[in-house]
Amino acid sequence: MKSIRVPENIKVGTILYESWGYDQTNIDFYQVVRVSDKSVWFSPIKSNTVETGFMCGHTTAIKDAFSNGRVERRSVKSYGPEDNPRICIPYDRHSLDVWDGRELHCSWYA
Image 1 (spheres, helix red, strand yellow):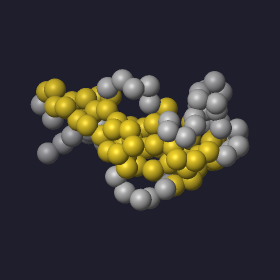
Image 2 (tube, helix red, strand yellow):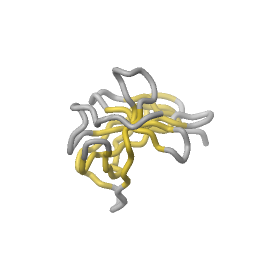
Image 3 (cartoon, helix red, strand yellow):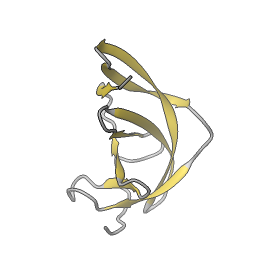
Image 4 (cartoon, one colour):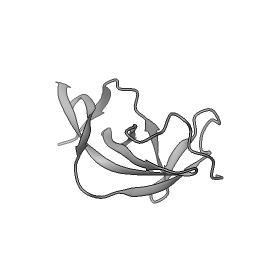
C-alpha cells in the first residue's frame, strides 16, 4: 500500500464510516475535521439506529454530533480499486468509506 493524495470528495465535513463485526454488523461513523495533501483527521460522531427486525436495523450518521473529543489522523492508502481509495486504519485492517447518506444495515447479538 502506498500513500496517495486525498481524493477531492473527502473534505472537512465529509462523513466516513466503517462496517465491522463477527456474527453482527457494526457501523461506526466519523466526520472529517481537517485535510492535508495525504492525510485526513476525523472524529467519531453519533448515529441514529432504527430497529427493523429481530436484532437488526438501519443506521444513519448525525452530522456534527461528535461523540467525544478524540481526533485521529490517517493517511490515504491505495487499498482497493484505484478509483475508490480507502482511508486505512492500520491497527485492525479496517478501512473507512465515504458515506453517501443512505441508511446502512446493522445488526447486534445479545
